[in-house]
Image (cartoon, rainbow, N blue to C red; front, top):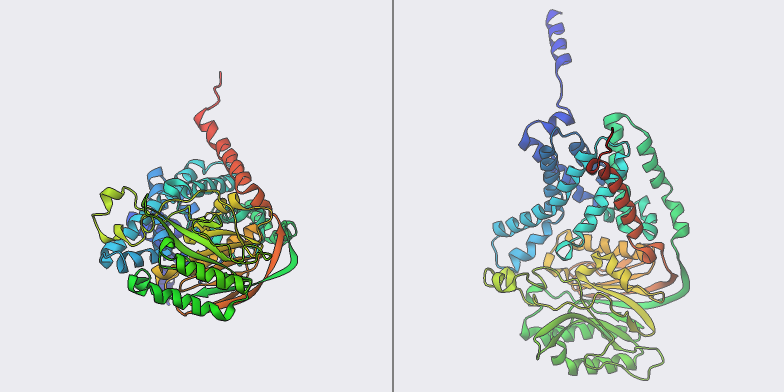
Length: 529
């Protein structure tokens, strides 16, 4: 009996490590825990889509920042969380660096870590602000505002890299109903607000902040009554062609003719479809050299009352400038007697947001000689205008974005018109193999459809080609790594969402005002006599 009592007393005094002990104990153990917490956020995004996970991982970041003993500790934990978040979520970035950039695996992973370390500076700054503001009674609102403004900075600084913004994880959750009103950035605001409120509940037993956040979640379906768009009752038949050309073969001069023939043969059974889409740079020959093919294709399309939008490289031999472009062939208007293609005609789009290294090289003269990664094919494009006209195809206006551009909603908003009928994004995700990158890319496109209340067409070289309804729902998609044609009938819509009208300005102004109200008294304390 005495032995049993002794054993019981030992069990009674045995204490498991608490979250506080783990976070604020060993410097390196706490960094590892925060990195793993940030990395687990990857499962919130496609293809996993655990939509509630960011609330937990962001709550852990808020707790670590607010309850650190020193600002240096808060900064360290915020950076560690961000490093795990971006290194895991962007793990696919190293694939083109290794496979097509000529660098060994370890060096490509080192470059991924370098990119992740830069992006981790934003959670670091968030942690510092959280540490500074932790005593304020409106802490949850302040933290959401801080994250909002830092995300805006990340989407702009050094041309911007807004990938993995937390709001994208909500494309299938209750919060998606808020997207037409406040956009993906607004969903991110609600996520951080909820996470900070959960932290307040667990740390201080304060229920009111979480009640406010819960109200935003539960009332989200009601927001759909004010989404601002409605169906016209008109449908449009479309055909999206996926050629599935291997990346290492796409720019082989010996295969140009066979690639162009493949796209034409895939398209022929669908001539007569009003709108046909080919993906980014589907035609591997620069436009001026492909003119005979384009004129022939233009005539064939017009004969069958079809219109085609395709990616192509436009090159000026005199100025040595190149543009990643989309051009329209065939019927411009249904009443046209023939095709309308002419060299350098105005019914085209030139990519504005270029991908660093992949499409332009900063400090080009210095970096290009250093390694093959800085001298990839087609990595020296000129930038198109920020505001361009919509493409006109068979009397339908399409607002285009090429590849990476679909992650910049403000660019789409700047080009959105009252009579824009559809959104269009074309891409070549063959760079990223069988990774999570193309799934995340598709999820971003879905959010744009939700924000603007327009059906969206996504045509890619090897997947994921898909048609997306105005409510963000995937209607159909082609399997990856197969050649094929996706046909669908798109329900057209009209009207403007509040987000397409006002963009992020209301939340930016709110966030700036909230944060200023918190910081200003500390900068200018009231003097007492």
